[in-house]
Amino acid sequence: MQSESARMSSAAEARFRIQSPPPTNRAVKVIDLDSATDGDVDRLLAEVGEADLVLMLMSAGADAESAAIIGRACSAKRVMTHTVIVRASAVNDAALAKTLAQVRPWSLMVVVVNDDDYVDDILRSFR
Amino acid sequence: MLKKEHNDLLTQTGPETPFGRMFRCYWIPALLAEELPANDCPPVRVKLLSERLIAFRDTDGRYGLMDEFCAHRGISLWFGRNEECGLRCPYHGWKYDVTGQCVDMPNEPEHSAFAKKVKLKSYPLVERGGVLWTYMGPPEQQPPLPEYEFATVPAAQTYTSKRFQECNWLQAMEGGIDSSHVSFLHRGDINTDPLFKGARGNQYNLGDLRPVFEVVESAGGLFIGARRNAEDGNYYWRITQWVMPSYTIIPPRGTHSVHGHFWIPIDDENCWAWSFDYHPTRVLTEAELTAMRAGKGIHAKVDSQYRPIANKDNDYLMDRTAQKAGKTYSGIEGFAMQDASLQESMGPVVDRTKETLVSTDSGIIMARQKLLRAIKAFTEQGVVPPGVSLEHQRVRSAAVVLPPDQPFKDAAREALIAHPGVAPASV
Image 1 (cartoon, rainbow over the protein chains, first blue to last red):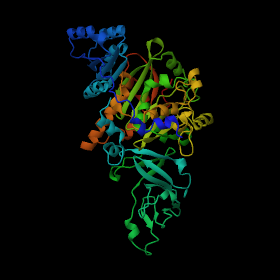
Image 2 (cartoon, rainbow over the protein chains, first blue to last red):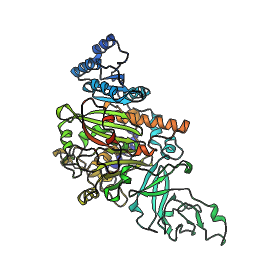
Image 3 (cartoon, rainbow over the protein chains, first blue to last red):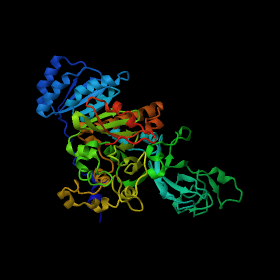
Image 4 (cartoon, rainbow over the protein chains, first blue to last red):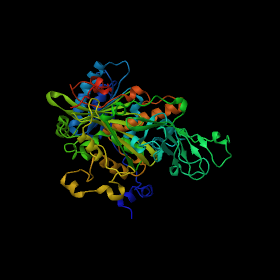
């Protein structure tokens, strides 16, 4: 007699997993801080309460002052913040440090990538 | 979530699959050296990357890894006689050397040249750091021998174990880069396990149960940093390294040894979880070795076939009383089986189209994307994947306290490189 763990982790038993689709109604708000205007930031702030995740994009070395404004709003509403920093090869450590200093206090997840193609992949993973 | 075609691509490593071909660019651990302990010892069956092989050590101490089955009638050479520099099939006496070359065919005329025309597929098998490594790719593209630090320090400074894990390699490996599960699944063990307890860094762990994560690309894979608050506004960082395709190094604690894993596909529904502990500058103590052999730290108690004693057939020795009392979080004892029990419960190959990933899964998301890119570049343009280069292998994890604005990759640059004879950065 197989144990329950052995029986239930078999490929045969996988057929009986409930097939209803996973949740797809997550509200993800994305803002590119390199190009965002004050109006874009204001619009995002107005929508933070409906968001499940706010994703901020920026280039390493860019000025990310509005990250604090967005982060504060997210913190008040208990919304997850995620920052993706694209680091071009020419960007030095000091420039990245400046950006990190601005975003770290307000980001619960930071990803530093060398290629902005990753941004779409990250978003797709969150559905 | 992952598209089905991407899930298939990342979880299938047989010889004719795209990832199978890329996995064969690397030297991978095949056996522990202890499995072939003496010249002319019994051969050992090995399955790697969905290929059934036989390993043996000949009369002169040379290691061989070749097709498990005799070219004559398909008999398993596990039944063979390992004698006089070759493995002889017991059915009709065909004998093979460590290169797979048939060297004797007693049921053919004496001095027949036919034996020279029969050669089993074989792969190099080389001992390094107590591990027998193999390279299963095209011979003309064979890279230099691996230089992961655990395999290059003196023998007295390193210990490696392996355990059979009954699920696809990727769901096991993803556990190794999923730093956010540590605060839950393993919380009962950090301050009690003999290979973890006593470090100052543990207090940062326990004092700040909501770490913040940063994932940063590295040349060979990823840095995965977990940040917690330390004194004077500084941050305590634990920086894990993932080197493609499946090597992870966990940050050390205090003066304890450094540890990590390799996850190697056996087939698409099983893998070997390799676990190592080493110290770059000192020998491992008898107490440490005793603990490792007893399945403490990241190791597991296993049987003679390297299957964990706690396994799916006995419900992993689930202890609901210990779970209720908070001694263990999941009711399963030990880091290794806490991970393996949950990963096996996902099924042989988990359906990643049904996941609901969140931000703290970014290490997993990035690792998948880096693997997918590498497979594409390798398949379409023949680009050698990250992790083959020795420079990518000579790396370390680190536990450090840094000022709040410092990019850890740069501030801890030297600590993240394996400098022989230099102590690890650890708190």
